[in-house]
Image (cartoon, helix red, strand yellow):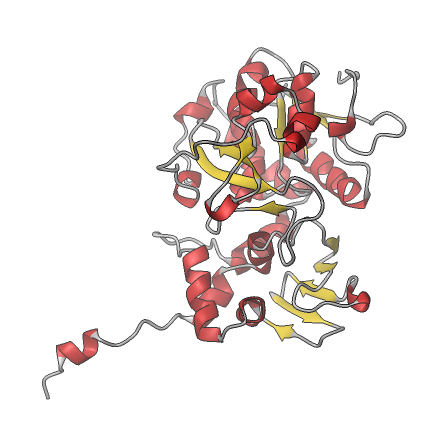
Length: 354
């Protein structure tokens, strides 16, 4: 019997739940909700405050297994995979949760194991041996301009924006208290008054080629809206593929200056004000495989990298991981902060880097 094409075309789209749970990692989902940074990592487990419920017993009640790609809250009893988590966060069914995940994390156009399973395998291999294995292939026969010549697939993940945020408030008290007017102008900072980033300080983020790929919003203070985090990222933006300020720091590195690696935006701003234009931020407390590849495309075996991370548990864990991985192929120095200072953005004067 001949198929009724009209009826066939009218069938509603149904998300492939199995494909979504295999391709998208829980780390990506937590990052979308700005929940990843405050969580504590121990092996394959992430622990933190459960965003699904409220209560005094909420501290560290949420447990996420990054290998099994599932979660459980030992307080409110919520559990499941990324679909269940999004459904609980958005107060919707799994169908709607699947549609949202498709919208936030579009499937790659070409093949390759880029999903959650592939990412978890990379996490297992991201130690010292994994770093050594990739050095020869990435640096052999590579000149100092290789970062321009290499065709990066990262632009497909974070395509350049086709718009600019305008009419930003550059004299907001929060900004003026933390950074200088020159810094505000250089980095294009300002408070947005509309849209997704309404009420937040927006930080323009560029890829290594200087293309604007995102605006990240920082709430001006610690009393951020209920259900939201200190930082807000655009839904489709994957920060693990970008190193903040790398496109500017490249010039200093090419002149023989060391690359200073820090965690956050305001660390970069403060170091710039102290005379270090060569600071680059992870935008968090972990170095992804993609970020390490970016560093390999810019640095050589004779390059110097200074690690200046926060003096807390997350910063210490990050320091051990990054130092072990980078020291396999370049010169690394750990910079200790002055007594009484817990993070680089609190520095008041220059300190010895190398």
